Structure formats: C-alpha cells, structure tokens
Amino acid sequence: MISRHRPSRVLLGLAGAAAVLAGVLGSSAAASAAPLVDISVVGGADAAAGAPSTGMPVMNPDGPTQLQVTGSGFQSVAGGFGGIYVLFGWVDPTGSWQPSAGGATGTTYRYAMDDEAAPQGYQQFLSFPGGATEASASGGVLGADGAWATTITVPGPVFQTFDRENNEITVDCVATQCGVITIGAHGVANANNESFTPVTFAQPAPAVSPTPSSTPTPAGGAASASPSAEATTVALETTSGQDDSTLPLVLAAGVLAVVVIAAVVVVLVLRRRRSAP
Image (cartoon, rainbow, N blue to C red; front, top):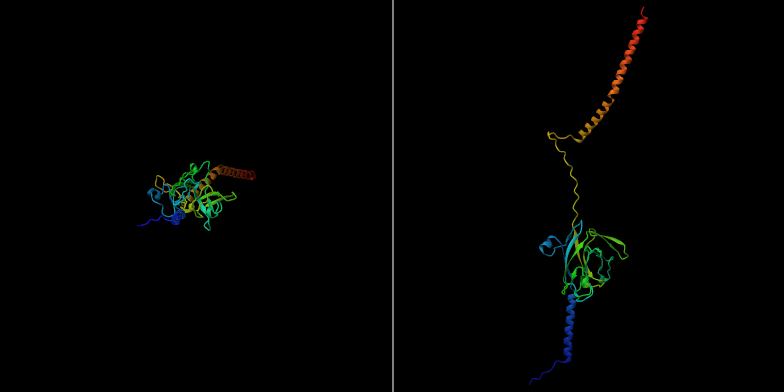
C-alpha cells in the first residue's frame, strides 16, 4: 500500500517565496528596460510613409516644427499620481542630467516653456491610466504596457527659458545639441521614464543677391546709351542751358562796344576837319 504524504509547510513556504522572488525579478527587469522614443516630422517623408524615422529628424531652421513622438518600454503605473512630461530642449552632456540622479531644470536640463493660458504645444503631459491627474493630461494617457503617442511643437532652433534663479537664458540649438526630453511628471522623479532623443536643424537657405536688370533695347533696335554716355549728355545739356541764358548779355556787350568805337571815330573826324586850313 502506497502511503500518501502531504507536502510539508516548509516546502510550501519555499515554493511561495520562489514565486514571489520570480515576480519581483520579472517586474524589476521590465522596469529597468530602457524606454524607447521614436520621432518623425509631421508632414515629412517618414511620416507620410508611415515608417519610423531613420537618423535624426531634421527640423525647420526658420520657424516652428511639429513632431510626432511615440514611446515604448516606459513604466506605466495604473492609478498612479502623475505620469511623464514630453519636452523639447537641452540636457547637460557632461554629467547626469536626470532628475532621478539629482539633476534639476534650469541647471542640468533646459526646455522650451509653454504658456498655460495659451499653450502652443511646446510641452505635453501624459498621465498614468486611471490616475487622479488623468483629466489634465494634454498629451494623452500611457497604455498599460508603457506605450504612448503624442505631438509636440518645436518653436525653432533658438528659444528662451529660465535658470534656477529665474534669470532668462537663450538656448541655441545650432550651437548645442537639443532634442526631445521625457521625465517624470508633477515632481515625481522616475528613472524608468527619463530619456533624451536628439534632433537636428536644417541649414538656413542662403540669401539670394538681387540680379541687376538689363536695360531694354529701344524699338528701333539700337542699344541704349551707357551710363557714362548718359552722364555726358546731361552735362552737355546743362552747359548748353547755361550758354543760352548768358547769350543776351554777350550781345548787349558787343553792341555797346560797336557804339563806343563809332563815337570815337566820329570825334576824331570832326577834330581833323576843324584843324584843316
């Protein structure tokens, strides 16, 4: 007769502990996976083809650019407070810029700020699903699998922001590397949701110098006079006008001279007649 023994409580406890440990390890591995962000320019070739962008997205150097931004591998906390911010700006390449590593806005990372009263789409907030902040999510809600999609507007290669002392700072994305930033929202630092994806700007179009217009040929077929010839003609016309204005004076002087000479001749003749015997 085969006897049946119930598993001991020790074995059951070890099995339960192993299951819990496996669950913790599995969730930690999923949370520690680096989040992935893909960016494409709205209306660009990649967006029209419906394919992920290849290389750095190229932005408009002379004005705003709208981007389609998608994320995967982010940590989604059902019913959790906050979510993620999607921003455009600069991060310090020399050290740990992330808030979870002690970084701070205005110091280790800077971004284009939006106006809450008249938002331009420079920054987006994506809420955790079912969280208390879901109603205020401007960019949507994270999926349970950590995937999301939103649009963000880049104001241009140069924008104004502020440092920790509220001093205005100019960020020039032509002189330094800029890109799309994701961080934990509402002051909740979360290393699993921090990322930086670089972008670049196209070169501005070169300035076009005006082309000198050619002088039209007269109806008769003869080429128009050169500028120097025209200048000479004007000078001659001016001189001629001056001569015409002084002509009466010259004539009057000539007549007066003739009269004087005639008078002298008459006086001389009369004197000779008187002196004759």
